Image (tube, rainbow, N blue to C red; front, side, top):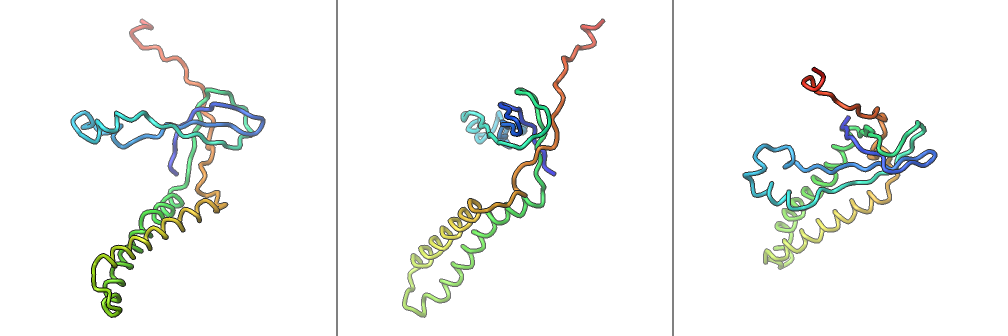
Length: 159
């Protein structure tokens, strides 16, 4: 299970609105100050994502919550989004390169154009499938409402 911490921004009788911080990989890299990609990532403001979740537990605005999504479902969706268009691009290019000379279309631009169109249609099909899907497996689930953070007193202050 992949977990993320969010903050409750609004509460309804059986729903909560949760805001999570979208993290980049540059945020955890030690070389981010010496890297061009890290400098570009810092230039853009951190993005936040808002979710509405069903919650029957007592919750207050400002509380932190733990959200989760199953890894195998996320990996399946990632394979669909990343691998299927790549496979379609390669299969179309190889097929077109072998079939088009028989039809008198020997210029490589035809292969590129048809490969581009088929790949674009693949992306459009994936997008339509995702929009029309009622698959709740890819929706984050509320795992726990975390207790409020207590004030930490350092040992030096206590002595």
